[in-house]
Amino acid sequence: MRSTILTWATGFLIGWASLAANAEKFPHLADTPAMGWNSWNTFDCNVDESMIREMADAMVESGLKAAGYEYINIDDCWHGERDAQGNIQVNKERFPSGMKALADYVHQRGLKLGIYSDAGNTTCAGYPGSRGYEYQDARTYAEWGIDYLKYDWCDTENINPIGAYTTMRDALKRAGRPILFSICEWGDNQPWSWAQDVGHSWRVSGDIYPCWDCELSWGSWSSWGVLKILDMRADERLRQYAGPGHWNDYDMLEVGNGMTEAQDRSHFTLWAMLNSPLIAGNDLRNMSDATRDILTNRDIIALNQDPLGVQAMKYLHQGELMIYVKPLEGGDWAFMFLNRGDTPLSYTHDWAHHFEVKDDQFGHHINFHDQQFTWRRLWRDGEGDTSKPLRLKLAAHDVAVLRLSPVR
Image (cartoon, rainbow, N blue to C red):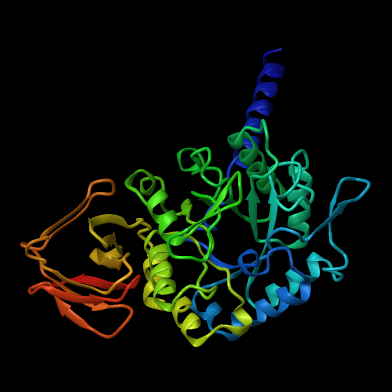
């Protein structure tokens, strides 16, 4: 009897351990924030396999792949209906070759393919959602060769978000293919407080809109400009939750979608400093040189991809001037000076006066009285050190970024 009980107990523990091992997200898929492209901001529901193939080609040919971008993500509206067994199908008119063939095409170019679904009965555009089909859909995505899942939050009345997103996390893990899990819950239920072990990133706000400081109302919800999202969510409460493998997502980039060059430059810099995933949302096939130069600025990308993984903190907000600082690996720091206003701004930063920077949340500290740094500008030529004041002239809505390195 004792032997029987021991055998049963051992089997139970092995089974429990197996389930526990599956009850986690895939590790090391987002040790740094994801970089890629998504169809929604430019194409809305107008997606098809020809355009996605062309976008993959353009990511390689434009230099974005070389700069670190790797995901080609199809947003809403790729769906067909479910078959008699409940398996989700692609829209055969838009994707006649099927999703597996498209994934193969993307993979052959050294890129990864992402897809979209929803925790509710239907997606935001009214296509079949994954509610009740999580394990079946995850298995299908794995069979297709999908590498990234954006999981939305429409049509989710009376659903518990922690339960819904945890279910899909477990389904993806059970399916066996490493798939980055991007939670798109809009920040309604404070996912930063519970999603660290569920997803690789989580949206912190509603949808972005290509404007500097505006709100576009859709009745029951709104889309937000760059500054609106910054003011809404880029605060000290959220940065403590972000780090390697789990990031605050400030939504997809609108660089190249109608804002001014200065606004695009500031938008890209802010998202990089905040460690948001850098997911481009423009048409990669016909970018201007200015848009390409912004999206491929490797010095700015390096701030976002820094292995230390510490999100920038607000250091000073004085009128229209904002200063964000970001600790970097090896003792370096990034300083971002942003002119929020509509007119040019002149500013002198006296390192001897603003001599102390303390990041209490992550334990980083500077005292410019005790240590000197050299600096290099990242958007234009320029270098110097902290032994003398920094003088800046910032155009409206523009930004200056310095990378500081300690003098050893």
